[in-house]
Image 1 (tube, protein in one colour):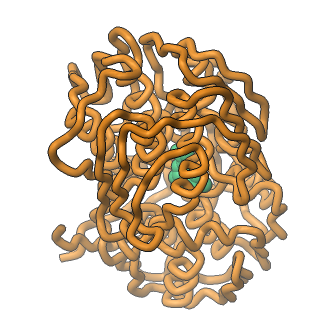
Image 2 (cartoon, rainbow, N blue to C red):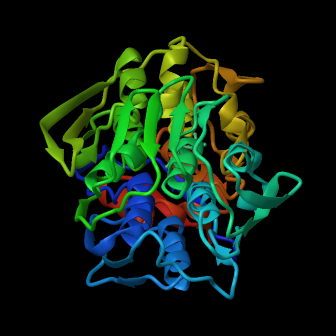
Image 3 (spheres, helix red, strand yellow):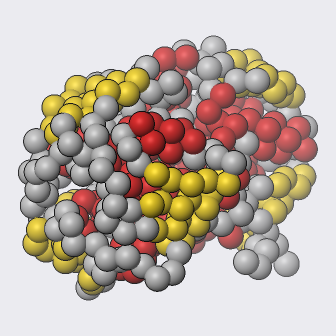
Length: 435
Ligand code: S3P
């Protein structure tokens, strides 16, 4: 892919209403469950990102008809639990860890072999966390020393297991539950800390009997999924950049309508409020079985905090932009218990530490977090390491920096947030492709 660098500068105070795109986690799951269901499911609010489109393409390669009547809409013609067909070509998950790990579980129970591949970043991400427990269920999946590509052998008889996750991970939990659809007996997953429960909620919405509560889920193989329509809420993780941006730019006030507020996603809201942020939830409601609301954020001076470790799993994708909030805050912020950040699309602790240092911010990296001393943010050049969330976070830093922040390699922003630059500039950012 060609290189695309951005320059982000101070703009004007941020104002207006920002339409955040659909939730990535929900969009992946909606496609997969609708594909395995009997009947036709209409998905509205679908994320038109590269990650979720890769999942759609993989399912289409296995014989699922997916129509796109309009942007943000998909009509999935479900083929039933046993209706997928072998793909002659590898299934390319692109940059998407969620796509690959969930598909690994789903494919483990098929009658045919499949190969899952990914881009350079995904090819470095650990897969044993899914292939080991799947092997205990009877799956046969070959890795390259624990890394992609994954060669999934079909025709295995899966047996349900009870599995206690060593690390809180919704992807691992979901992979096991999807394999459990094809397994004999019960599959039960127990988590060290509750993670996002979209798979559980959505399985129930598609008519599969499942028992779940925070930190635990259990289902039995051999039932059927029935098509249902899915309304995808706007992605809290994408809204996060605007929550921090409006908090740190004086004079700002933004409205972000229809944001998904599943409590397993909104840790950043609590963290920012602890730091002094002014964020209100208006029109709280339920949509498609998920809590949704309009977020209204106004500038407020932030101060550093010792981040409660219990918040970490509920904001696991929001740390890059929290680092920016901490850099722009008064005083010291201490982050602990977040070692998982090192195996995301990049090593996010190292990426943020290097970038903030390049902008003159005092930051000390620790094995599972960082200590950040807020203060002036300078101009400079930072590497995104082709990580979408690192790129967007430094675009937020540019809003309060003393001079332009050049962000190297921003093309991956489209994996989760197509149109970010235009939307951001529309409310007061000043991001331009570097010439
Ligand atoms: C996701 C789970 C999280 C998150 C990722 C999406 C999901 O990953 O970081 O962006 O949709 O299940 P882990 O399960 O690795 O924590």
